[in-house]
Image (cartoon, rainbow, N blue to C red):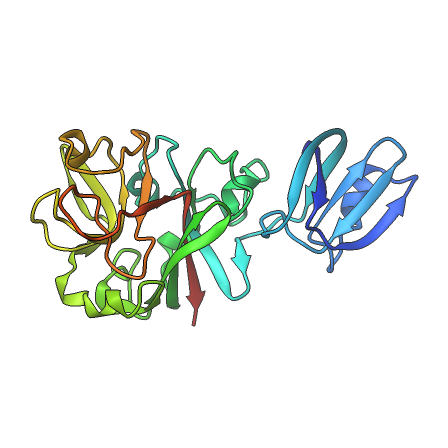
Length: 286
């Protein structure tokens, strides 16, 4: 239950009951066609919605008279996809620390007190943590992996990977790319991509995860499609070799905003990349 909140838009009303009805009774009546509900103690109003609290499009507001309730869900799903990881920008926690923390999960079932904003791909401004699914520790029967960059509630880039026969960390390879916002450019660049891995390139003064970049030449001339900065300031930024003045808060989800290579260096002709709010990774099972 989430006291002091109600749904204001984006929800499909399945049924509404007007008093007398208690919060407990309202919860019990959330049946097969009900994803969630809100209840008003004054006047005893119970409204059932088809959507789940992590579905896109729902808008909530604070209201002391209302309480939101929901069924207990094991995983976050969207059509045939299941969310296995969701990173939130600039919260001060490394993406790799959460991704690689075996035994840590925020689903199976999803805890009632886990922030709803941290399960969503829109209306996520209050999110203060990353999400990790138990599926990362049980990587079996995976057919495809979908990696998505979200900015201002909208997907701005994606890569679809072949997940068959992979492990938690091995699916992230250039040769496994099936489709992408950056296709065909990124597929044609497969042989040029350097250190293509989730763990990426990490040392004392640099830490770049989910790394899809060209050869290491010099900060001013390196190009990339995407990477996640898990350490800031990166040595390239600290020495003044990058054009953008990026936040010093981690993580930072860097992605190419064009259909091809991008570069932050001061001596490069490629467009400057952008940064995303959310990095979401979904899987499709066989």
